[in-house]
Length: 378
Ligand code: TRH
Image (tube, rainbow, N blue to C red; front, top):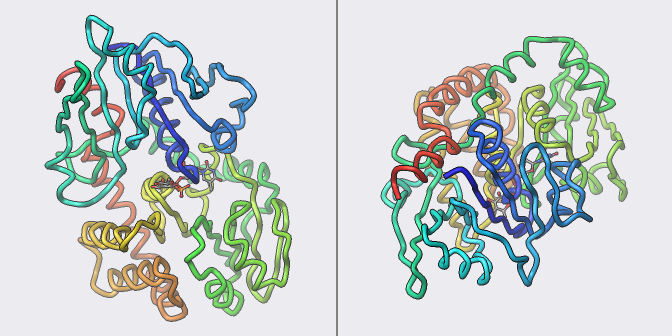
């Protein structure tokens, strides 16, 4: 079970490729697997990994072979283990090649991360193909030991700890971004969100706060709010806007490991979707999550079940502050009241974030569990 093919379709945004790229790297580096990652949109991939050349159909990047997923699909010998990320539907010619193998490949569908209870029951279920001699297994990431766990590189926490303890390393980081070191009472926040969040409310509160606030926004995010609040139509990377005690800086989209450092370096992080959401948890700072919007408010339910888990052990007021802010932020309601209550709780929320992350280690690393699953369970 040494060769792996991972298939990723970039639906929209960066979560699909973000998760697949982390997993591919982990399988190659930590588990010494031969990994091929098939991606249909190399331009999106290039934004989180600038080493990937969108013009090349076949390349090796950090130990992973990256192939362009074209239609028709190129002739390729199937790997021992085939991971279909997020039900992306394998190319027919590749499925036929899998069927033709004497020893059939392990075929695993990697699902989205969810805190819902049913995930435990569905994790590992088999689905025999009605027309081919192949069986697909469902692998569900999740927040309990009985799920597929969450992605966590073995050295993640040691790298994070070294970074937060080493002033010089943090200084180098800010310098690379072209941002001065934080001043005495300044607070830094990263803001990665969808359109429904009322960022202009936050800007309005932060400009009036006694402390200085620097808000770091990836290029292309919160554009309308920035435009409306600062009266600017251009918000490309490198621009800096001021009003009152608030400074908003537009960052280029960062390489994935550099984005992790941003989360470690900020006092509070607004995260979204799946991958930044998890990285926000490993950063051990107060965070605000916006799930990816789904029909009929399914995402709001997912947020509530996560909140139920996340708030265990938080004192009543702090838990209420988290819930109120996340709910308002996700539903596009004003955060004018919820923000100050949340800000007051930062000390408690930071301690809690560390406890939460320590507990999360116990659910197991997804890449490790996936390797075991491919060997034992099928
Ligand atoms: O981009 P997203 O909104 O992705 C979403 C979700 O994953 C959602 O579940 C999925 O259904 C949908 O896509 C199709 O948010 P997410 O999951 O946080 O992914 C962003 C990725 O981009 C993550 O790997 C972190 C990375 N990133 C960088 O590498 N550099 C950056 O500067 C930023 C802001 C993000």
